[in-house]
Length: 448
Ligand code: ACO
Image (cartoon, rainbow, N blue to C red; front, side):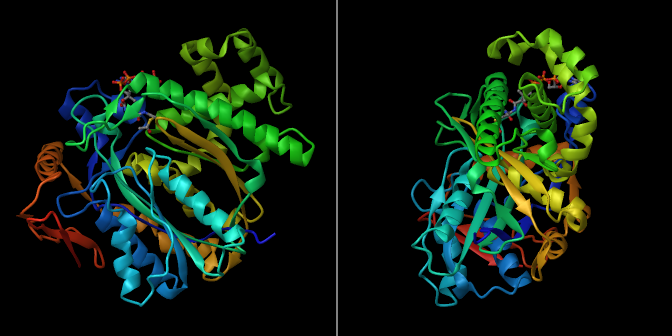
């Protein structure tokens, strides 16, 4: 095989953030609700200078520069996003500015949208293109870009913002195991954006949690079945070194991994030891629906899978806990956290990925990792991602200043004829930012 997959990655998130601990106090929530209850540390957000277009311009420019990729070598560009700035004009067309300047307008692909799943759809499109007979030998490029903001209320602390770019091609250090995909798609109203005049979603929080966990179960079952069909042996948690989940907030990731463990127990996996079997036995007869509501099962399965969680999931949680829900970029930021934490020991290892987009669309798939050759090596990807430095360089806003920013963003959403402050003090060198929107709603960006 060609080992098609991810050759290179970069991530950008705004340098502006708010601490969950201070937000919790400001909101009058009980102490620990956002930090321990939701499991979140910090939340990034865009100020009036940044949006999903500027973040994607920043991350694509940075990726091309840092890996020395000639823009003419890109043959397909796919964007995943659920943040609507324009109901017709794709974000991809904005990114064409970078390529037009180099004389390359021969680039297929537009935007994909379904809540947080759009990035995965974009990735599959690029991988399938490279694997297909219409591939012309050039690279694919996937961009996931979102600004997750919620109205005041319990969902507000589950926001976040980021853009991720991934270069796709053959002989990749992060190669796709296309044979073992498990997908579950259905129609539900758990999280959606029917109010076109507002950036905020309508969300049924409890339903969205249950839908997510049901999707984890369905996808895992299908993934296991496909694995077994091809490998002629059962799959269990022990067959993957790491798991990366779409991460609206960390607590849901903890619950999801516990669900995988419970599935292994129900499937009689040899991974589950005697002690864990005894603890889970009382729940073996629950129907699916009952099992999602059962708090004792939740507790017991989290407890017996705790050590495996620390080993196989915890390394993926850094960016999602520090940046928040990045919607389409969330899963890939979790994966980037694994590379950041473990790049020197990943050779030959498997990472299982779970993508979830409300509405709903979900897939479990996996990557096989290889050290790779410079510049497309795991260690170079880790150094380009530069996660620690990017996190440390951030500016912490007070909750008051965060709320003030949200109000300004509400006034700017869908507006025309305004200029931004152009005060780029907090932005790092090379960051694109919004300067104005004219009377025809045309947007203008500059690069610091
Ligand atoms: N100390 C420690 N833990 C606490 C505290 C405290 N002081 N107070 C509450 N908690 C715990 C709760 O017990 C709960 O944990 P549990 O589920 O393990 O019991 C957790 O904190 C959250 O508390 P809830 O009362 O359940 O929170 P609430 O209902 O107010 O809001 C929710 C949470 C529904 C997730 C909300 O933030 C939301 O709607 N977010 C957006 C929807 C979402 O992200 N869904 C996920 C999939 S869809 C998507 O990706 C958009």
